[in-house]
Figure: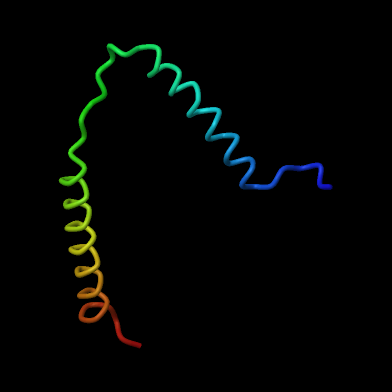
Length: 68
């Protein structure tokens, strides 16, 4: 048996160290409003920015970078 835990076990432990107290705080304080985040708009903006970034990179790489 190994005396050191694996990387996944460490990651799970760190996640639990953060997630469990956060869930306890949320569960004991029901009067705290959870902010609503417009997921659809965030995803749409991310896709649009990613598309424009990739397009700009390809235009730069194909037309403006120095050819060897």
